[in-house]
Length: 381
Image (cartoon, rainbow, N blue to C red; front, side, top):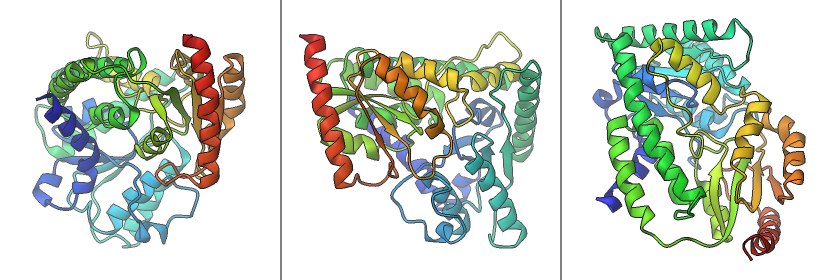
């Protein structure tokens, strides 16, 4: 059961977006989201299932012909490629949260492509404008946008029972899944029982796996992982632009690191905070995503607090700032000062994290890990 649980969660992370376009009937209840800042609770309460578009090394020739280079992250190239090649023709909807300029531009591009007839068949393309700021009017605005999206999705699915009770039930189920994810994450950072290459899909599957199924599989996986002997190696945190694939994990861990955390909603940020099920469900869901989501709109102070909480027992930090990044690079000076105060070595990588490291970058990572190993030896004696 435990081995099957790990394999099933990994497949739940890797396969859903790849499988779109193979079965029109199955695609009919899928809502494709460009980043997990869209509340999965409202998608499920509307009777639909979330599918995340993520970066990969798969070629995107059709998207590359219409999207400017080094402006859109790979995940958006993958989404537009799927749209242009007809793989999304039968999904229920595409939802892009306005969490970065590229996501917003991608929304506009898809709408314009549809207007010009550049896409043969495209489902409704929706924009979710959740604010992360702290103004007095923001909670009401976010709740209104969340309710609006829920009503739109419920109308698409024609689910008559989609209402407050369905939202509350979806939130309860999601909270149960989050508790299981937090236990898995603790096995990385507190006990070092699992490498990041294996852990990322187990955590990232939270967004796409039905919550009851996720809780059962994650619990079984955690039971098996807890029985393993501890790992050795320099403990590395991934920061900067949030990673959405495990290609960089594979590169770093081949060189001897153990990735123990990521400032990403697909890794250590997957679980986040629970939804307050005692409150108005729409307001509670909006509040949770405003305060817990990791994306380009996350306030710098909140992101810094989150990263600082991940630095316990970390020996080094790898900061990913790919060519398409237009947000997280601005935060680097402040992050560098934080790491200097902690005497933590770090390296900045500016390649696309779904691609292989260049030889020069591998050399820099090797040097970082040598420094981290010496620091680790001094720390543990």
